[in-house]
Every structure is written in structure tokens, then in C-alpha cells.
Length: 226
Image (tube, rainbow, N blue to C red; front, top):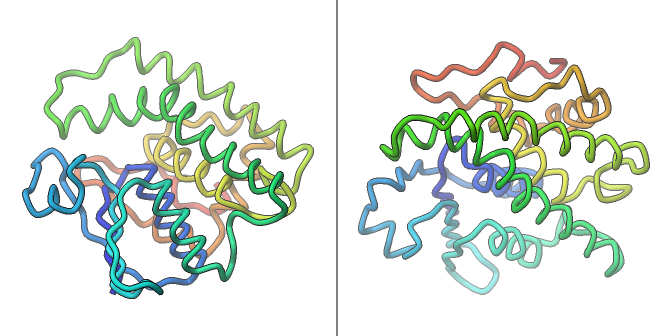
């Protein structure tokens, strides 16, 4: 059995879900309300963060892995079928660079300012959303969508000829922001076309079924054709 401890709008949890699904690995999900700081969960990950993967079927025996980057690298090495960091060393480096771009730069400039302010603050009891942070997120996202468009004009997928971890990391973050209706797709045709391709994959459909009580997504969220 594999269990993934996650949160609905955690892009890092969503990235791992996509990797597991693309590799056709069966797993169960357990929502972890990290703000409750549950002792049993802290025993798994003292950092108190999701995602955490418990893999009782690992090739080297049962293992518990924390941090989305470490989890994805583990899954790539332990289950090499349907590789998501493909190619020669320079190509693999490009996949990792772009995955880090979205997990670090996009996270700080967009996801944290939108999803963090509008959703997580409420659950964590951290007060009212910052209008300044939200404005920054809404401004910054154009830069990142332009970059996705730039890459798509030159490559089949973000990092090259094949779907990779870079695409899944980017789509995981954008799916969280899109749940709030804050992605200006109509202004970024190339990024929209790329996201539609990722969004239509079978691995992505469980994400589109996620619902947060009291916070419904926009109508286009689960529409494969927008």
C-alpha cells in the first residue's frame, strides 16, 4: 500500500499525485490538516508539511519520504517505467531546472500570493488576506505565463520533446491558482493550449474533481476545453 498525505490546494502534493498517476502507481490519499500538528503526522515528518509518501511496496522495502522533490526523485528511481526526467544529462538538468522554477520562483511570486493569501490564511488563522500580496500575484502570473508561451513556441513540452516533471510541476501550481479563477488564460494563448494538453491527460482528472468545502471553483476549472 502507498499512502500520500496531502492537502487539496498544495501544489507540491498535486505534483506528487500527478507523478504517481503518470507512472500508473496505485495509492491512497489522506488529507492532512497540517495546522492541527497531529503527533502521529509529526512523527512521519517533523517539519509538519505535506506531501509525505509512505510506500510499503518500495523495491528496497517500506519507506517514508518527505518533501515533494525527494518524493519525485525517489519515484523516478524506484519506478523507472514511464520516466518523467528523461534524456541525456543536459536534458535531465533542464527538466530539474524548470521544475525548480515553478516550485521556487512561481511559488514565491504567484502561488503564495494568491492561494496562500486567499485560502491557506483562512485555515491557518493568520488573519485577513493581504490585498498588496494578491495584486503582486495577479501581476506576476503574466510573466510566468509568457515564459511558458516562450518555451512552448520552441519545444513540444516545457523541457523538450516529451512530457516531464517540469510540465507536472508547472501544471500543479497553475491548477491551484486556476481553482480560484485567477489565471488570465485568454491573454496567453500558448500557455492555455499547453495547459489544455496537460489537463486532458487521465492522470490530471482526479485533481479536477477536488472540491474545497465552501470554495467552489469556476465553471471552466474542470472543463477540458475550457
